[in-house]
Amino acid sequence: MDPFSLYAAIAPPSSGRGSGLSLHVLNPPYQEFEPLYTAQGLPPKQPPFGALVGLQASCALMQRDLLSELVPRIRAWFASTPVVLLLAGNLSEESIRLGWYAGVLRFRAVLMEGEPVSTTLRRSLTYPEDLPGDVLEWLLLQGIDLSPELCRLVGQIFAHAPTCTEISDLLRLAREPETSARARCRKKRLPPPHCWLQVARALHAALHLQRSPDVPVAEIAFQLGYNEPSALGQLLRRSFGLNSTAVRQIIGWEPLLHRWLTAHHAKGLFASGRNRQFLSNRKLPLWATAVYRRPGSRIGIAT
Image (tube, rainbow, N blue to C red; front, side):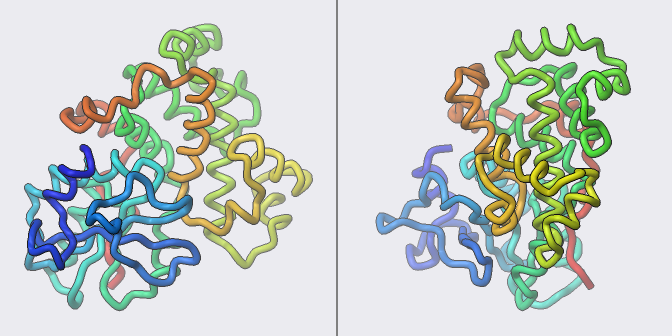
C-alpha cells in the first residue's frame, strides 16, 4: 500500500477525512505516543529505528472488516516497526473482545487508555515463546518467498535455537538433511541455515535483554548458556551491528530482524520478494498463518 492509499483510509483527526482511526508513533524511551504524520499530512515510509506504531480507535468506532483489510497493509508498510492497538475509553466487555480480536489480526500488543506505556509494551513485545510463528508470519508479510518446506525449516530453527548452538545438531533434531536444507535456501536466494540459526539465537537473547532491563548483561548471558558476556555481545554485533546496550534500549524484535534482512538484501539475498505493490493485494496462505502461531496468544488486555 502506498502512503496516499494509506492516508485515504487513516487520516489525521484534523483533516476531517478517514475512518475514525489514527496512526501514532512511540519513540524510545517509550513514554508518550505522538501523531504519525509528515508536514504534508502523509505517514512517513518508516519511523525512526526502534519506534513503535500505534493504531488508535475508540471501541465504539471499531470496524472489524476495515481493520481486517488495513492491519496487514499497515504492518507491511511499516516493516521494521511493531504495530500495536491503542484502545480509548475504559475497560469493558467490548474492549476485552477486541483484545482477543487484535491477536487474530496480529497486532503485537493492546494498550488501554491510562495503562503505563513502557511497562505494558515491554511485557507484551518481549515474549520469546511465540517468536517462531511471529517471525514466519512477518517474513511472509514482507513478501519473502517461503515454500511450506522452508517455513517448516525456519520455524524449526527458531524453535530449537535457544538450546542448539550448532546447525548440524539442530537439523538432526528437525530430521532435515543438511544438504537439502542448504539447497532449499540457495534456490530461493535466502541465507544458509547457519545464518538463520545465528539470527534466531540473537533475537532470543535480545528479547531477554529487553524484558529485564535492570538485570546485568553478564547475568542474562550466563542464564542463556554463554560462558562469557562478550560471547553474547559478539553475537549481537555480528547479527545486527549493535551492542547489548543499544539492543536493550529498544523494544521488540522487528527492527532488529529488519536490520538483519536489509544487510543480507544488500548482498543480493532475499531478491525474489519484497514487492510491496504485489504484497498489498494478496492474502497470506492459510498454511502460513497457522504454522507455529496461536491466535490471540500473548496479546490481550490485563484486567
